[in-house]
Image (cartoon, rainbow, N blue to C red):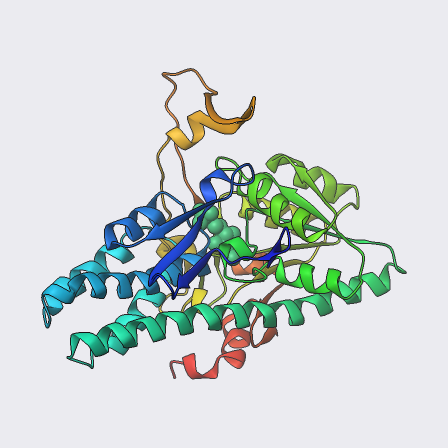
Length: 369
Ligand code: MRU
């Protein structure tokens, strides 16, 4: 996507220098810092510390992480135990997003049939860069399918702007291009359909206020940042036409894990008859499970993310303590929205209802019987 006239992605391979580079998302929107990833430990830390975050981006980073570990492994050709351990360490960096396991496994599966270290490195890079490009294409398709929903609402509103609520950052920073939840918004906006986005701030790390608002602003999309708790109120007062969120893992039966607070938005949307859509590439489906509340591991992060709030103060990025220093805090990072509260999924293959039969109709190769 274009930022201040420059094409930018959250991750790329710098061919001239032979290294993986990422945007350090921890300091946006106030500072745009680029980091080099030359060692697998750095890749793992980058995922853990949320230098990169968002399910498709974590998947792409994990995929390139396998390449980085193979380059490092040059000194000990043929040691599969070492590289399998590195893959495991990469997959352990965060527990909820399906894409991480998918990305790492995909590259390792492509590599392990070869024995020559040089060929392995070449194959790993090629496969990882295919993951990156495919996810960009998937998000563009999600945008095309999803914008039809926005267009339909626009027709019904006789040309009035369509108000869309989104949670967390499921934009291009969380993916490669376009985003998942934001792709239909960018596509509709680029077609000239008037849209306005309600951006949940998304405590504790404020991915909405910091990242989604930054992205939308850079693209010129009208938006307003709201507190996480404002969604119910604005839905009751006809200020929301449509909710679109992303997801970190969705079961084959349609239960959706996404950033903490998504479930409450789905409940409020259902109570107010507002369509609640989830946008995702197929790499986010966990085809092995059906019950999300029981089977999706929910990450618990450092409580300091709740204790301290980061922002700009006199031109410097600072952190300040909010609750009493001794109050215990608990940081559940995701929740699960049951399929019954989801109106539908927007995928790279089209839109479907949130039930196993409809999902399988789009992805017949995943049918088990
Ligand atoms: O903890 P994060 O910032 O990695 O969580 C990200 C989200 O919850 C996104 O909504 C999700 O990954 C969808 S990304 C397109």
